[in-house]
Each structure stands twice: as C-alpha cells, then as structure tokens.
Amino acid sequence: MILDTNAVSALLSGDASLARILESADRHHLPVIVIGEYRYGLHRSQHGQKLRTFLEILIRESLVLRVDEATTVHYAAVRNELRERGRPIPENDVWIAALARQHDQPIVSRDEHFDQIAGTERLAW
Image (tube, rainbow, N blue to C red; front, side, top):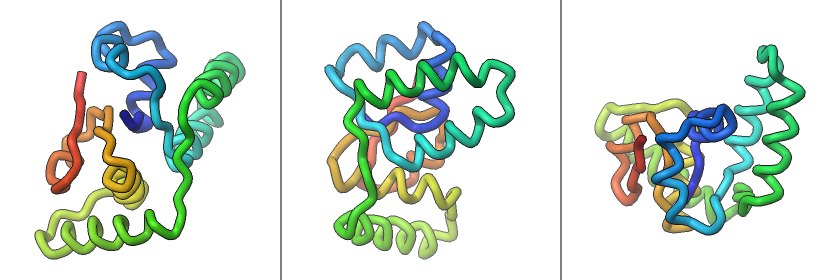
C-alpha cells in the first residue's frame, strides 16, 4: 500500500486508528513525492528533529517509489481523465495516483479526491 502524506503524518504522530489498515502489509510503499512533501512540512514543525528521525526510519523500512518513464504514462492518463471530467486535484496527488496505478497499490489517505480516479483504491481511517 502507498502512504500519502497525511498517512505519514498520522503514522509518525502515533495515530492508533491507522494501525488497523497498515498491519495488513509487511512493507509500505512511499513515493518520493510524499517524502518531499513531508520534509517540506518539517520546516514549520516544532518537533522537526524528532520527526526527521522517525521519517528516516520509515524510509529505510519502506519501498521507496521513484518516478520513472513508465510513471509518466500513468500520470498523463490520470491527469487527462480528471481534466475531461473537470475534476482537477493537486498536482502532487496526480503523481501519487500515477504511482498507485503503475504499482497496482491502494493509497492510504484521507483525501477523498483519490476516490474519483479510476483504477485506484483509497484506504481511509
């Protein structure tokens, strides 16, 4: 399963309700986009150093998904489908959805806009 940024935030803050979803996978998939978004958020966090340490552990224990040429095929399709329906979503989430399609993985997220993307499944908590 792919962790969205809000899932990483919940995980690293100890959100117990997320554990039920995450326990079904041995390893989690972590897009480089999510790593970048989370690191950006750490610049404003009063607990930045502690959370940086937790993030580094999560990165080591996860399968990091990088964007490659194959991802661009999925990205273009997702973005076009959303444009045709007049339902844009944040750009980084288009990339996350593209990685989910490419790797055939559900997205762990509270963002309901992932529900409108065909070929993806969102797991919420």
